[in-house]
Image (cartoon, one colour):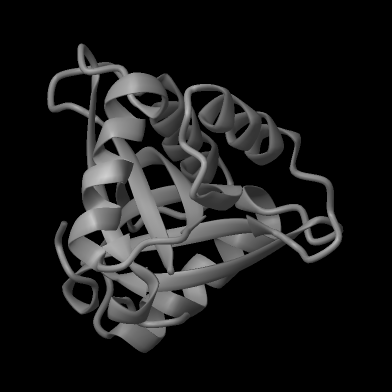
Length: 85
Length: 85
């Protein structure tokens, strides 16, 4: 099964990439954009008996490697649950 | 309205970040993970009269700044359409 693991900056943590992107978009004439935040996503294909089991393992991955708990929060979304764009 | 803009590598383009992450996860003992791909997401807050209008503007942003058409494909997902994890 395939999950999207979102690694987002916590509220209050500076997001220079998002801010620079916002500035660049405004300079290009996109005036209606109000805010840009940068998010890292890992698409993870994992073998598991159930979503619950997989979510437990993925949470462990986030805590051990993928996210820094000082600045990041993470969330798991299953690919079948999200609209394919 | 708030959109998640996914900037993914096209099929066949090398993803060293995903590969390194997979290796590191395996070294940490996560043996059931089969594949990891890295994706960049911009969360964009934009003023628009309709989703259609906003999607047109965001597509222009991707073509002008956010994505490199040689290696990336992009997709737009509306925050209300995705499950909050």
